[in-house]
Length: 113
Length: 145
Image (cartoon, rainbow over all chains, first blue to last red; front, side, top):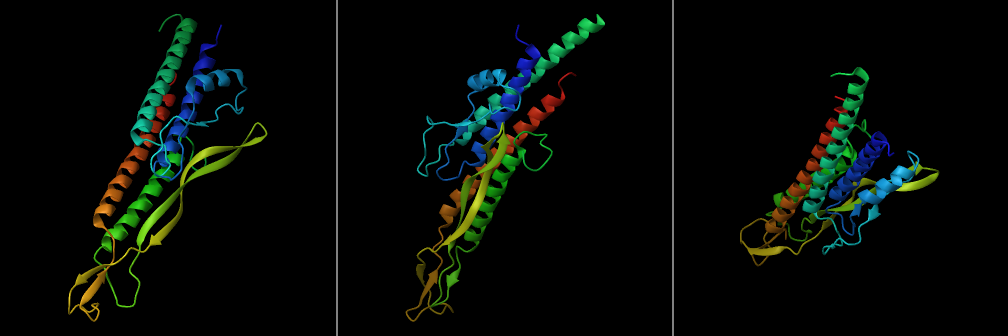
């Protein structure tokens, strides 16, 4: 059985790491020759589940598919903001799910609310 | 990461973005302020200030290897590029040459306005990222409630 709490914790970790990557992209929206980086959630999570905590698993990679502008920059402000919004929602969902999990355990221990 | 408590994810990264855009805004303001500056005969016109940005990375030790992690953006330098001065016929002006022409700095206010709007939008985008980070931190604090 997959440990739900551990899975949710790792999802929170990956989501927080992805937020750092996306924030760095936004900060470099006007930097010449900057290429946007991303953390593919699925792959990173799978890697993070097998790795020991703190191991080199949350490394962002350069997104080669993004189109570059005349200055060689591949950051689109609106797209990054959308990714950030989506990622924040995922983070909130995981935090919420973790809360429910704990609430359920509390209920089981106490036998009531 | 870096300074601060690290309570809000990526706040130090987004702060570098805010700083960079503020510096850009300053350069643009300086340029607009000098759009009508005249040049004395024999002197060089005031140049157009431009902020050159570069991506910033920090080295961290993880699992016995040194990794480069994103640390935001940094101002590499601020360059001043001279523009061809505009010549305006204004005899009697103290800076006029023998034919009565005054040289004005070649700064284009329109170009500066576009730059200013660009910097404002980028500033707002970085603020949004900080706000999103704050939401994440708040939700993390609510775990178990």
